[in-house]
Length: 317
Ligand SMILES: NC(=O)c1ccc[n+]([C@@H]2O[C@H](COP(=O)([O-])OP(=O)(O)OC[C@H]3O[C@@H](n4cnc5c(N)ncnc54)[C@H](OP(=O)(O)O)[C@@H]3O)[C@@H](O)[C@H]2O)c1
Image (cartoon, rainbow, N blue to C red; front, top):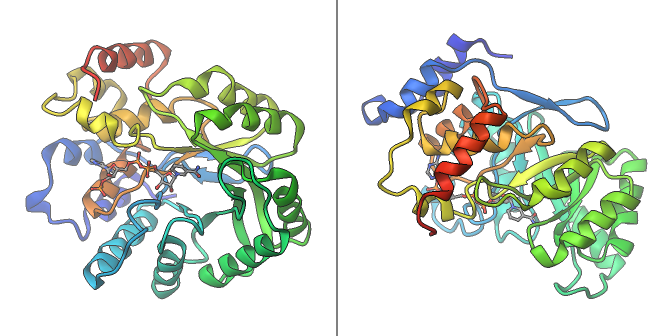
C-alpha cells in the first residue's frame, strides 16, 4: 500500500503539471492510500477504482491511440489500481489491452475481469463449443494461466454458459465467476440468478442518477456475499451533460471531492455493497482524476442525500 506522499508523487509523474487543473491537484494533495474492498467470497481486497474499456479500447486503429491507452493502463497500476474490465465483445479491447499489459509487464499485477457470451441477445441458446473456444481465446489474449474473473456477459444463456465457468473455476483456471447486465429487461433474471446460483461477482450499472440497483440488487449482493463491479458510474456519460457549466459545491470538500468525477465516483463508492468501480477513460489525466475518487473520505448517508438532491435539481441530459 502506497503512503500519501508516494501516491501523490506517482500520480503527478508523467502528467503535464502546467496543464494540471487546480481542482484535482488539490484532491491529490488531500489524498491518502487507495481504498480497498474485500471480495466477499474470498476476502481478497481490491482497490475501489479500476478501469473499464468498452468504448475506449474498442477501436484502436492508430498507434497514437494505442500509446494513449498504454499510458492510461500504466497510470492505473502506478497509482495502486489493479482491476481491468474487458470482454471479447468489446471490439479490439481484450486483444489490445492484453498485448499492452504483457508489453508493460503488468499482466500479473492486474485483476483481469473479462466475460463470456456467445448467445444471441434476446434469450437465444449459446453453443457450448463456441463458448469454450471463446474462453480459450481470452486466455491467449491476456497470456495468464489463471484469469481472475470471468462473468457471463448480459445474462447470455446462463444454463449453458455458467457450468462452463464453474468447470473452469473447479480446475483452478479462473479465480472468480459472475454475471453482468446493464439492461433493465434483464434485471429480474439477474436477481433470480443471484438468489439461486453461487456467484462471486455481479457487474451492473449504478450512478448518482441511476439508483435502481439500490432497491434489490445491491442489498441482495450483500446478503448473498456477492462482490459488485459497478459499470457506467457516470450514467453512460449523461452526468457530464447535466453538470456542464456547474461548479462542484464547496461542501464536497468534506468528503475530499474537488471534481465532478470524484463526486460521482465517491457517491458510488460510499455504498457498502460496491467492491470496485470501473470507469472507462482514454486519458491519463482523467485516469488520475478517477483514481483520486478512490482516496480520502467518502460521503455519509446525510451527505449522499444532499448529493442526490443537487443532481436532481439539475436539468436532465
Ligand atoms: N454488461 C456489461 O458487462 C457492461 C455494460 C456497460 C459497461 N461495462 C463496463 O463498464 C465500463 C464503464 O462504463 P461506460 O463505458 O458506460 O462508461 P463510463 O465509465 O460511464 O464513462 C466513460 C466516459 O466518461 C469520460 N470520463 C472518464 N473519466 C472522466 C473524468 N475524470 N472526467 C471527465 N470525463 C471522464 C470518458 O471520456 P475520456 O475517454 O475522454 O476520459 C468516457 O466518455 C465499460 O467500459 C465496461 O468496461 C460493462
